[in-house]
Length: 253
Image (tube, rainbow, N blue to C red; front, side):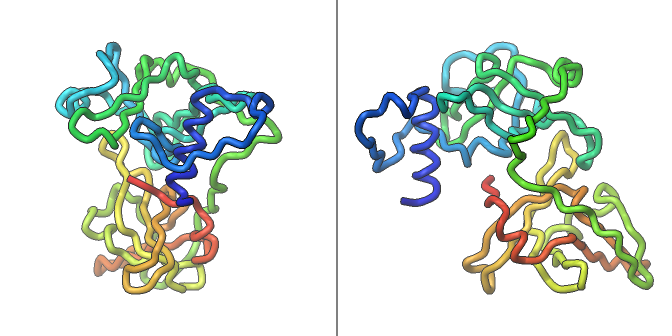
């Protein structure tokens, strides 16, 4: 079974709220249903605020008017396996000042695009200002976040100075080589994830050969060090090996 089919089957079970103890015989799901939603499609999804949402389908021009207030960082599961809520990553700039907020599912709507039903909008009934005033969601001592953050490098290279991502043009970032701390190539920066117009994550292509068989993962810009010289040459570093990057969860748009 493919990863997508597996995660879709998992979420179908979670949303149904079925407790494993109630299952007397194995139940195998062979194919994702047309309305199933996978965990993979929700994680890192943009989150929007809308006071009123009519129905479960929405036209793209309506969704474009919603306020983008953050992204889905994690799902919260109850002991019986049902989805209890979501963890939102809101606020901040370049991963500075970000805040994680836990919201119950009664405050969350999953709405499909009427023209592209594979596209899911995560909509909440709280504004960004309200969420910023909410208490920080804290994981207990057993729970873990999905990916451990890499400490940003603090490298020194002759003729180069550290710069912030907002001071670099997009054309210089996209397709740039990403280096490990020993100047070895660990991937290529393929795309940038924006939040309210600001770059917050870098999508890096790791592994593979000549663009084939690779894996795309996302890292926050706080995990990267950007060095630039007077001639405009940009070098991007991360304190991780290619193997470590490949162990990260694959990023999907």
